[in-house]
Length: 218
Length: 283
Image (cartoon, rainbow over all chains, first blue to last red; front, side, top):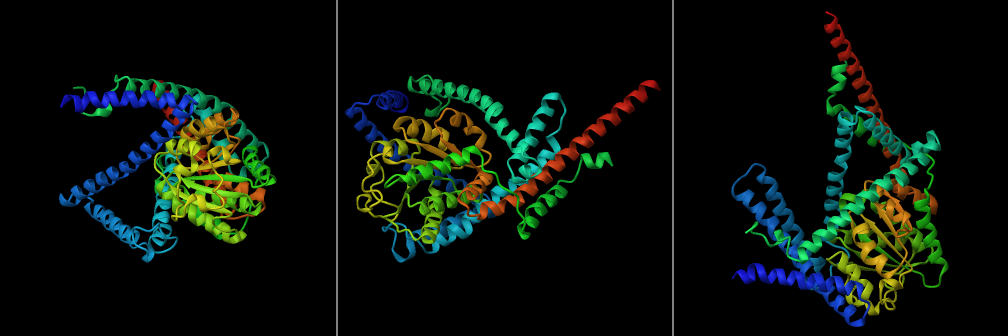
């Protein structure tokens, strides 16, 4: 049992990880054919992950509804919305579930006129909170904070046409801030993150990092 | 007074931001839009592709409804330019919820330009897997997308019939709300199969992409609604992005005014507390 729970996944991660790295760098036709097959396998597994996500989401909301937790009505709305979308997807504008998704129909209408406006509205609310947070926190408490504040104001002005309307210097200054100091900082962060990702990947491939297996440190 | 300003009710700020968005939408005024070099580079690459015979461009739609306000006008401007210059377009999606937006943008712009599905453009739909979808397309495009979004075989569509790999595209553009440009398209696509790549992204993502422009891995970038407005200026067709610059400009000014006010009250408050402390010391 321990073999299936721990040893076999470790061997699988090692073999697939090493093969995955090798086929990426080896230009031989056999390696490239193997890479094509691995890509198809990965896509199939990734597709199943959506079912897992769906199961997790539905279970979470069902638990809330059953236990009448605060806000359980929203969970009911989630179930109802899901059911309505599924009905229209299966109906598929009269073509049925085994036909490619229709170009028009109830699903497309709901997607463009309900889903997209709702998600856009959620995102747009950020503008209000960012304005409020900027008022409360964006203060020149130290020379470094003052510098950040000044750079932020220049970029905010320079990224909208009113900046160029006030002075041609503002968009140029904003562009310089983005292309020179910002880029230097981002490159440093990127190098650090990439080295960390390589180290973590090697730890997983060689079985040092085992958190993905679950079950804690046992 | 200073205390009240320091602890200003956030609903007042919300009200100003709402007015800053709503009022300019109801009014008609404009500011001159100056395209940046990064946006101009994307435009010039499409002009370069259009000058070739049977130029072909792949557009990857990697965003959902949350970023539609920024990226859909960008997609429309790019498609309008591509259709006008008679460049063949193949669209894919790395996000499941991008397919409907891609379909709406493609159909709207194709109908406007009188372009036909299958011969001038195609929508391949969504495939899960991000990096491996890109690797798969690089190795075997038609194996990765054997059918289009509507079930037609990729071999039967004129626009995709001769596409074997990503290297067959003259230009690839990823419109992204997530990390698909720098985490997937550059390492697994552009670096491996060597094609010109550009990114269209939300404004908040744009600073992350500057290192890739300097390295030449990205030939250009369109950042946020401002970038889309710059692209509309370049193609000479003002649309939603250009009109969106009115509320965006006014809202930025309002936020800057609030930040300045907050700092003035902060310094006044600090000076007053310093004076109070020195008076207490003297007493």
